[in-house]
Image (tube, rainbow, N blue to C red; front, side, top):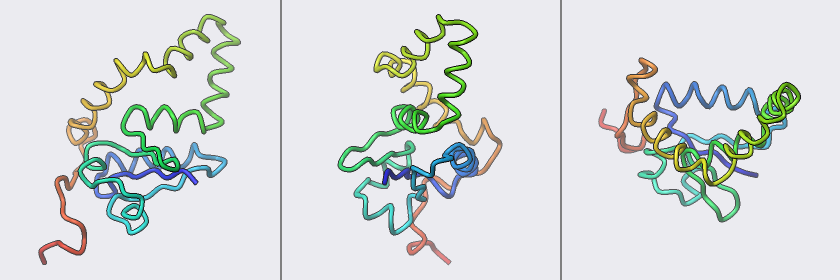
Length: 139
């Protein structure tokens, strides 16, 4: 099963994951907070999961924008919206294909990085980064 590693101590990240879970109608993704034992077994460095959401598919790891694109194509609602847009205007198929192509990474990667850096300001939520694992917290 494909695993998603996210920052479970961040309000913005946790709300985003809840939204993703609601879209995962087929339950194809396993959602793991980055400090969980299961996430630790996947071999993704904590520093990487601090910077961006991580998608682990077998031996491949996708981060940030690239992980979001791969998540979206697993959601039936994504394809329903795509079909509706193409029905309304067939030219939207080109936009959808461009958005899913590697060409979109040129825009998607920096936009994702900016949102990740500013997530507390955007959402008004708190985030515990940088943070020690629960076993290392000072009482």
